[in-house]
Length: 195
Image 1 (cartoon, rainbow, N blue to C red):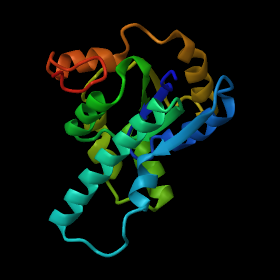
Image 2 (cartoon, rainbow, N blue to C red; image 1 turned 180 degrees about the vertical axis):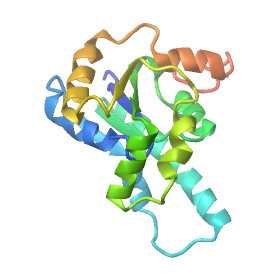
Image 3 (cartoon, rainbow, N blue to C red; image 1 turned 30 degrees about the vertical axis):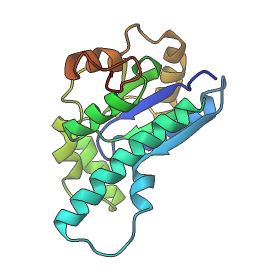
């Protein structure tokens, strides 16, 4: 069975990733796609209050599990739309390690900081300043296959652009280039340590 394709949306909180993902499920018509969002994984966690150190460890395990869930779904032949915030370098490195880089279309979801701040205030369900904190960190790796600006295009327009680009993914993909740049050469073609 061929592994599934992964459309990986990376951007700050309030940048429009989830809205684009929902539109993608409606416009991608050459397969069955699943939307996997890091927020959904965070929502599954216990609701009791956790001390800072325990919370940090739980969040790291959650995100590592999320990355491996994406990989498992794709390995089973499912096409995936990922909605994630790569605001810490280790998150990208972990994804580069567990996902087949040639099957990932890496999409940067960008939005100017003033618009992110406005959206964050309207939402009211995010800590103030979260998007500003993430703004420079999320795109620090600097390499994508495709980028969308949600201040100048609607989620639907972004989804159409991604749909039209998907069959024309570059070779090598951004994930392949990033993996070669950031990970040791002894990784095999599936991202696992070569024996």
